[in-house]
Length: 120
Image 1: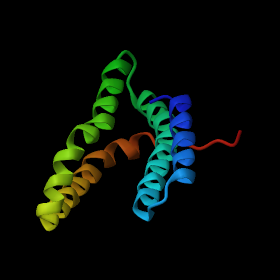
Image 2: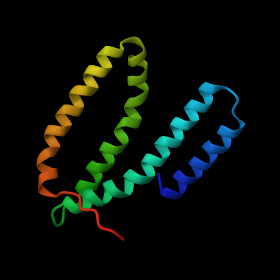
Image 3: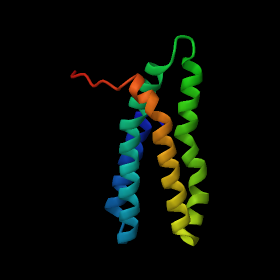
Image 4: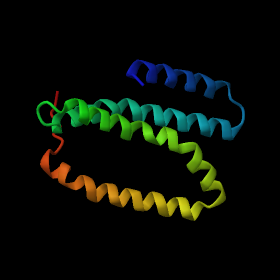
């Protein structure tokens, strides 16, 4: 989702929030706003990082892997949500294990190319 589309979605969420009357609807809309803001911040930074760590000539494979990792949760979320309702402890255990494996697997990449923040 581009930044412009995310901003448009954020404005739509906020307008709906003004018109919403139920508290659970407002909570859902605020969650959508938070996700939209997160996408607007994370996508450009993540894309730049994926291109930065890519060796010369392999940028396309790094970008495709980044995109696969970025959009896989959208495909898995409905199934995980249904499973979380039925068996919350199982879902939390599986996701915790995946986070631990991801942290261990990505640590060499983080040491190789730390993300530098420059002012301006």
